[in-house]
Length: 255
Image (cartoon, rainbow, N blue to C red; front, top):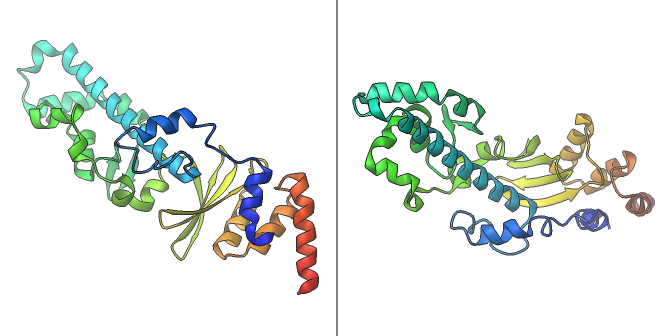
C-alpha cells in the first residue's frame, strides 16, 4: 500500500482536476500555443498549470498591446512628430502602471512578460516599446506563430519558480524538486521540468516545517517516512489514516 501511496491519496481525496477544467481543456486542445502541452482529455496537474501559464502570457501580451496602442491613439496628433527616443520615453512613462502590475519573471537580468517569446523580444517589450511602431514588429500583434518559443525549454526551472505558476518551491535535491500547490493542497514531485507524481493532501497546510519534512521524504524516495508524517500530522482522509497506520505497524513488525 505504501508503495502506491500517491494513488491512494488521489482516490481517497477525490483528486481529479479534469471535471474542474473541462471547458478549459477543450479550449486548450484547440489552441496552437497549448496543444503541445494538453495532449489529451486527462492532463496531469502540472500540465494544467503549464496551460494556465500560457493563458497568463497571452493576457500580458494583449494588455501590453491595448495599453501601448491607447497611448498612441490618445496622442496621435503629436505622435508622428516625435523622434523614436522620445516616443519610447513617453511610452515607458505612461505604461508604468502596466509594468508594475503585470505578471513578470526575472531571467538572466531581463524581465520576461510573455514566456512564449524569447528574451530579446521580451526585452523590447519591457524597455523599448516604441519599436512596435515598426511594421515588422507590429505584425507580432496579429501574426506571431512563427516567433513563438517553447517556454519550458527556453526558461526551464526559472519559469516554474516564477509568478506564472501558483506553486511554492519547497526543496530540491539532485535535479529533483518538490512544489506545493496551495490551491489544490497537493505536493508536486518533478525531475527537472518533467512531472513525476502528485501527492494530494486532505486539507491545506500552512506549516512550513511540515511541508519541508514531506518534501525531503519525497526527494529521498522514502515513502515510508512520507506516510508516517502524513499519519502523524493527520494529513490524509480519516479512512486512509487508519489503513496507513496499519500498514506502517505491519511493516515495522516485519522489519
